[in-house]
Length: 221
Image (cartoon, rainbow, N blue to C red):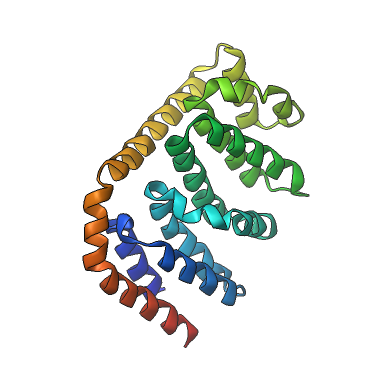
């Protein structure tokens, strides 16, 4: 746990320094330690900091995310996936919004005996995307009807229909709007500074790689 905390300290401070090679190494290590769910959950908690600002690093691991979410149904893994999807949507626009909403809808449909917490998180992620791209969200309205007994899904349908909400639900939507604004600022800030970041990565990559490799070698021991 101390090593995981060290990993977290690195990526919380400088998520922009992490490279595709290091993400590949981490996902390989996760596969090799599939029986250590607590540690894996904590690693995904910290990977979320990277997904927030460098979502493209996770594109090739969509299927792995879906497998783990379906099998484990843990909040930590899905939250990282959520951060990836929302940041990816902000970077890539309406096409990504449509693809990601379809992915989320198919996910909630496909998981048998889905936990209430996970289904709520899935619909909340649809809200985050839909706040930014409401016209795309509106085209999915009928897909949400079978799940309207879920309060978050019901709020999503009300958002699409423009229904007047309770003060509590309107406050929740306002918080969602604030969250998507904060994510957008982080993603755009990273994109604008990509040239400086690339130079910094070249200087710092060796140090970061050493810490990450040390981290996973120690777990092996």
